[in-house]
Length: 196
Image 1 (tube, rainbow, N blue to C red):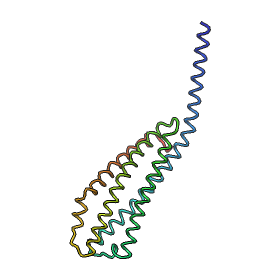
Image 2 (image 1 turned 90 degrees about the vertical axis):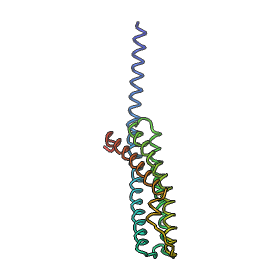
Image 3 (image 1 turned 90 degrees about the horizontal axis):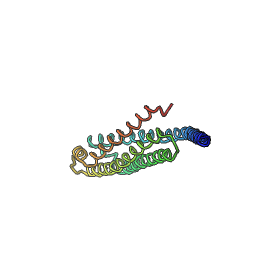
Image 4 (image 1 turned 180 degrees about the vertical axis):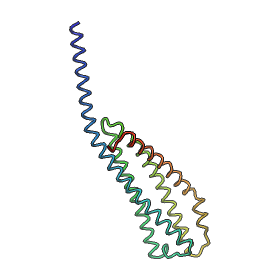
């Protein structure tokens, strides 16, 4: 009987030590997870700013084309515009990839399940946004080709061309899907008070 009591006592002590050690590691990892989350989120914020720049540029180009002004898409201005769009798309891809890398580091930490749940959802969102970016690149190229053809005098219904394109449908579909996943991640952050 005495041996059984000693065994139970030692087992209980060992389990409490393991729980204590796990708790300590979890707290240490919580700070690291929080920092990684904030770093990833900064890249996502940058993506949102850069995407707004791209949308403004596309809007300006479309407006110019509809007014019959081809100066922004021909000659040196056209080449500069193409480079600008390519750089914006590259910047978005770079920031999305960097954000994903930060979130993936959270998944490698011990404990911090709430942060892992958030990171997993954001990784899903980033993957969708990267797929959306591929279609955006195709759409931008298609728009550029159409604008160039218009500048050369071809009669193109640019509105119909864009609105009926498979790429635009995919861009909108994937954008909505990515936004939904990001909203789910934000809800996890809010519910679990990950920023406090």
